[in-house]
Image (cartoon, rainbow, N blue to C red; front, side, top):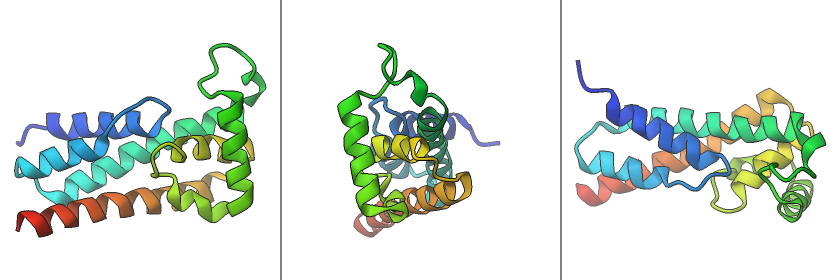
Length: 145
């Protein structure tokens, strides 16, 4: 049985990267690809971990907004307002871009705060994040030959 540690570490990195914590799941994915791990399981694990982290943000937005003025709330008022404006401007389909650095995490919080349903959120965020990891893996394999 192959060691599951690299996959677990990738999942953890992807999860953390999708929350409001800093992280770089893309670098972890590329490092594991460079080490010879097969792309399919890596893309799947990274996608699931990253979407799970986005679900945490969605939950924060949906269920914890009443605490947004507390010192411990993980999103500043200005960041949340910017994400809500962006979400309202571009609508539901903007969730396809939840993987974009800096704007993606607050966007997922805003989606929860604006009561976006679970299934549309899951499908759009999942599609965008899977697409990003697929492009990274395919690009790596094209360059690595």
